[in-house]
Image (cartoon, rainbow, N blue to C red; front, side):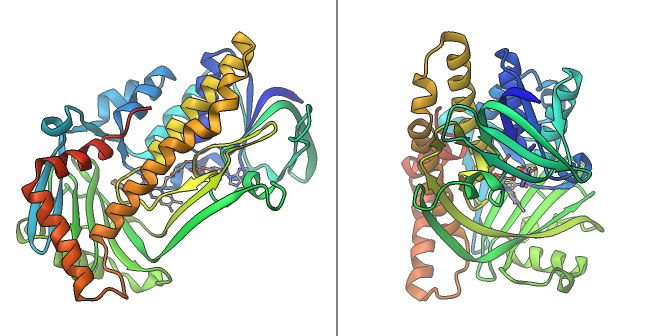
Length: 389
Ligand code: FAD
Ligand code: DHB
């Protein structure tokens, strides 16, 4: 088998890249380790920047998003029983769209299928070869049988634990990392949200986030220990803990019900540099991780893919290598800004085990500064809606 661009991973990065390249007339094959149903069962991000929405429109997959996505003109920060609204529309003239990553993935998969493009699910032992030369290859096994795909380029969109970044020779990457000593316990439930906008709450008991998927489906998170046992968290314990971390009005509006999904995600900041090795390019979580406070993970994957798709389109359309040559530096410039913002929001709102009373006062002072300064709120809003591409 042969294609122009072999894409490893059918998460949002791989699928969006496939769709943008299809629009540009570039052939792709996607190789995915898991089944389609498994990929669609993962509950992850929920907030899309306008830039991501625009890219999904460019890819031709925004019909359901436009009909079902919830446009949010603001969100709230909670701190010690107070709540501060960040009015995105007023501060920076932009909004965000609440639409789950699962739905983005579903829409992209449907468009790929409708266009008759090839995705190979349940591809085992995916391995990347010869990307430092002119003729890269990808091999895998399918129902025990060895398979091979020859290609011009490989796009590593296989997430943090995938084989793309791991295939690089020792010493060719510089990595930067912070692992946070806590995780987020997330619950999805078919209950109306406690607030029509998101609430990011910092509390002495730890962080909590109130989010949603629709007017009848809520997504909530509470900060928990990094190694906590999920079975120790009954629904009842989760709802009690959530309410304890919210201001009284929000807590009074929490409607409880049985969880339909419950999982713990670790928190990490990570960047690998550079993003290109010969004919292999890294994009999305394969190249970087942000802690979820600030909702940047999926949106960063989208901006990487935008730069990369432009590079491939220039290579095939205009026979220019400028876009591919500039990809790593261009993407990293935006990645580091999102890393800074996600780290800052995480530091502001979480409880750290080694925090002393001075550190707590610094968090409080930051919140009070935001309350009193339009300039500070504007900087927060500008980052939350997404910095320009
Ligand atoms: P992924 O979505 O990870 O997709 C990579 C794909 O590659 C996967 O389908 C994987 O199965 C596949 N793959 C892996 N290994 C192989 C292999 N060997 N062969 C072939 N395919 C392979 N962001 C937020 O903004 N808010 C959140 O609440 C949030 N929650 C998250 C919770 C969890 C548990 C995780 C892991 C991430 C979360 N994120 C969140 C981050 C966000 O979901 C990611 O930034 C986003 O999914 C990145 O997309 P991606 O396509 O780069 O990677
Ligand atoms: C959601 C997740 C986030 O990390 C975030 O910052 C906002 C919303 C969500 O899952 O809805």
